[in-house]
Image (tube, rainbow, N blue to C red; front, side, top):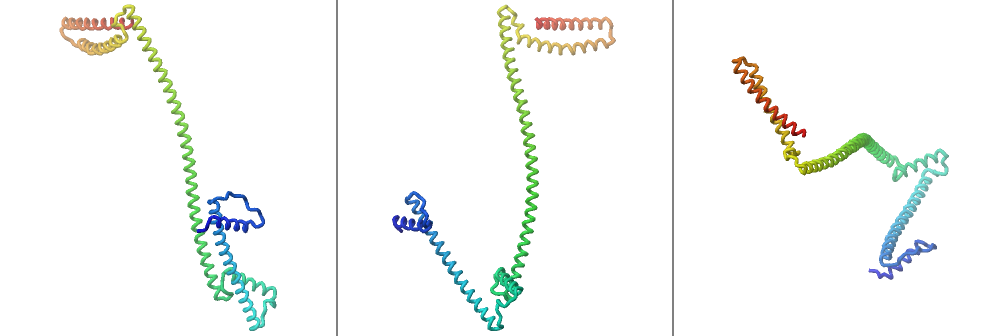
Length: 278
């Protein structure tokens, strides 16, 4: 493991190499920054070495290609006494097009045996690309349809949300109004209850009969309703007597009895009503 002083020296040398004549920016020198910069310098050194090897390889290949080109040119000159410099402008264009095609197709030479497989591969790649383009086009159309449906659904949901918010606002106003009415009724109920209690206390202080209190009057009202219900069958009974054709004297006696009973009940009812009005 390298010592911290050695790492700092390597980092300083690397920064000087990177910035050259320019001043090195100020930075805090500590163990962490030194370790980070040292790691970066190592990565940069490995990258520079790889780039150097690639450049040297390309230089070697260029030299080999140049030697091969010179060899082929000399061979062409020796066999048919032909030189590219002797070509016409049209021939030079054809030759350059042939060379550019070979470079574009990445063939090893310009022979027909090299061009045909390269063109077939290029045609196959073109067909695959077209097929992928069709698939992508169909997928895009499907996505467009789904997007349209989604946008329509979103619009409907937004409208429904607005309606729901409006309805909720209306219902909230109704509820608030009902709560206010309920509070008002509760206050009035308490007010009436207090007034009734006060009035009962005042009447009691004046010597009012307890039977005329609110509770007693409510009980009398209920009893009055019950007595009215009881008079209904008596009236029906009386009507049945009126429809009969018996002995006139006996019928007259029954009628009188029924009338007296009805008068008694009506008198009691009248008395009760008068007491309630007081």
